[in-house]
Length: 158
Image 1 (cartoon, rainbow, N blue to C red):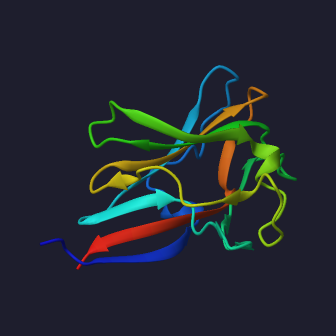
Image 2: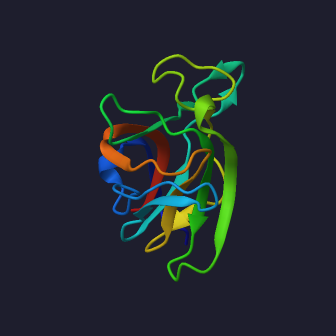
């Protein structure tokens, strides 16, 4: 007999991530990692919704990473969204693009900043991962100056 499954949408912020790039110095050859561990008896997928019958209810992906200067300087470069196993050996990249495409707006949808529910997801004790590869070296990342809005769908067996 199959278990009943409960699902709901949530928006992750930078405060939800247990490991961040705060205080790290950018290097144009090194991917910097933000990650969050999936809780007990949960499965989480990046994204929410889809386009169904012409109605678009996909979540808006917004990631603005800045340095620690005053005024703060935007970090430009590439990003990846991935699922990583609990042993941190296997990683499945599900979306890759440029940071300037996903910091356009927290409320206005455009072609580059929407994220439908994607991939198989990450299960208990594995990780949701955001990686960035900066275009410029020698910037010190500041969580206090940065801002995330990452839509996810959470599943639990009930």
